[in-house]
Length: 300
Image (cartoon, rainbow, N blue to C red; front, top):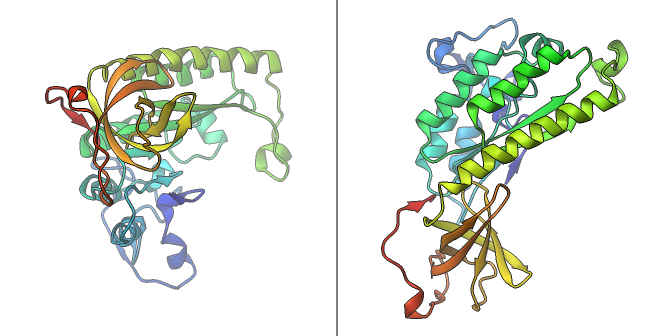
């Protein structure tokens, strides 16, 4: 996993520090997509290409022998270029799983947070990601109760999640963090009881959305990278980072397997082992009767 606070901005700091060359490109080739001109005032680097960016880094890591899966997080909407998305799509080891926080769904709150994009621009980004990467899972972050957030502004956040139906939302209630602009200059004026109410409302919404998304995988065979044994089942994750518990008496630890989904819930799924598809080592074989008819494979 390539981990960074704004990982899709990788390489731009080289330009700022004079360590790399860059070429100016048209705004639609930058972060906001075709027809969405990036504001050079708010995101001065979003319309320039670094000499070596995250897409190049992913390609370099992809060449390392022994790696089965590659992920990166967390990204900022303003730097999620088509080039990065196309690289995710084209490299088999890179998982179709994008973490791109929205933080809020109201333009005034987003401006207060200095996020540099609007509700509509984030919606357009999600559509662009889904258009470029088949079977992608998109995760996001939300902060409720930010300084001055009204009930009406919160409704915009609720609505964007209801409309976009993202695969996972990491929720947090706002609290002042020492040294931040909001802590120094803004008033934490949303009552804690209201923060809790808004948090619960989004939790309930996301549970319904996740249940709906996962239910579509019932009966489908997915690829699972098994991590460990957990309460008599094998715990692992799909390329989309969905949690799956695989039933098998075989030792599947550390193996890449195909498993047929037999039960779905909002936060996890259960499956039965079909076959071992690990790129290296001797494959583990299931008893013949556990094989099913050919079922579409989700993931890579």
